[in-house]
Image (tube, rainbow, N blue to C red; front, side):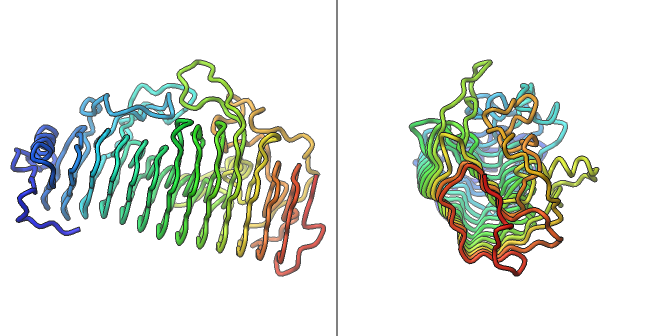
Length: 483
């Protein structure tokens, strides 16, 4: 995006007194510039090249373009007191994700554009401990940007980095375009889209310490619908793209295509319904997954009310997951920790713990609920390479428990870290509580000799396997176990 400096509606923050030296806090000068621009009917708030603008929380207004020029940096303060406490609340209470650097609520026609940088200047000293959702952190972890209940929002050609939590939180918004953005966030999520409509994410590169793109719904009457993701490259220490676990409203009409998912250590695509709504009408096509675990993980179950202020949150009802398509995929999976985002040296015991978590092993993992089976799933035209090396053992399938029966205090809080299930009994596809699944034109290879069968179907029906080849051979009866 080019900026015409002769425009009369361009407001340079340095004209309002910003120092731009990265030392003096420019919060008041930046906010003054935004307010003047807004009072005059809107325009461009301009951050000129060659300067660093240190700031605490700032508030955007309608009809504002927040333009950071090439070689300009907007830097978040490293002092928690510089972040306001009136910038919304975390939907994942008690996680301390309330504060943010840039905030807008109930506005329209907002643009944030580059090619400059917005840097949260993440420092580990901001933390008092690693996240633990079952305990309350006393230190807030500000995100870069939260846009709440706004319409016609654009973010284009910027670099986002150094967030203390999420980079971008879009909540209850309509008509949002995220284009050409680069996200460098070792800490947590890249984009978190909550209960919003008509969203396009395109031509973005994300390198994240948590989910690359997290899709959530926090209100039964506020679905997430009409969302497309295309032409993106996503690397993540966890999932590249996740739906849920916050899932009080529906997820509908979601399309992801023409993307590369690389070095994802906690799953490629995770889809979960945990709070009684529906996930339906989703297509994932023309994707390459390179060096990922759990390329597709889908779960439908009951979970306690996420974000509840109650000491003992109630169990939510069973929801629905149906009508999903996965087509034209090339997948290379791996076992164990992922580099570069997991930088530790792991013991054999720790690596085994990765392998028994559904999101950290390399099987396509499909798990419904007795009263909410996964329905109408299609996997077509897929070439997938697994690590192999699995050992065939007697399967304790009759002893499997459903997720809502697992004690979160003993066996992992998060919905996808259930080591109690053990290493999957199938190397390629594990399906439980599933109805009407089509697996067609699929080539499966193992890098090492694999003793486990490729497929396991438990409490499932209407299974179609067409034109399947496993290590160069047509599928045989011994390649499946069923219960």
